[in-house]
Image (tube, rainbow, N blue to C red; front, side):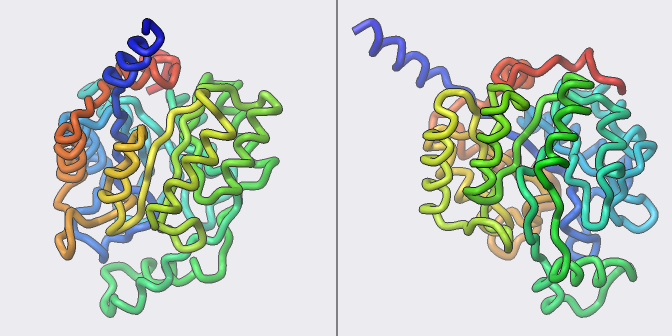
Length: 320
């Protein structure tokens, strides 16, 4: 009876981490006027998302002149300190960068900032958004259409050697832990490989990603298959999180949360709040998923609780 009681108490006390990815490198300024572009806009969007309930903020940088993705650490450092000074959220910096960036580009800002958390893609893949060009006739900036179209003929590179380099330089070198991004079942097995070799160490923060053209689909059966596979591979050594692209964002996050997962929202992943309705801010999406979680009698994790769940080094150990 004592064992059953402990299990019940543990389940009742479960906290859900909300991650907000505020700008990313997928969407372009023409697709929505609400995409944060400048350092000031990215900082404000991040702080607002944290105040709405996000305990982790996932960050890319944009060239403030035209909104194109940039790896420039100097741009990151224009918003990272401001976010830290105005909220307690965990800062998660991309190592995925964007199309055409070198590994050195993708490492530059994380190595400068030494964050608590970085994203880490667990495999090379096709990442297609080229079909969007069929819907857009007039582009705000010259770079946008070519950038979107080239996703038809480019591979996002994350080889075994590249993954190991990210872990050695950021994990071993900076004490950074990772949001391990898994776009398909094979990525879970790659993560298990690095775990078995003790290059990565538990607890793992496993972000399963659905609905990107080139990765696993957005059907609830896909979500359940990823969950079952992760359970079999990692047991109790991981925290599960759900990221779904576009219109699938909220429904799959809701299903996943009910199944024991954490959730990710944000304008990087979807520019919509509901069918045909653009989200005017990242905070709107955070508030929407928070309302759903609380309606399911689930508690939202604070930044301190997220740090404990993921065994992060603490905000006082970063370099910004």
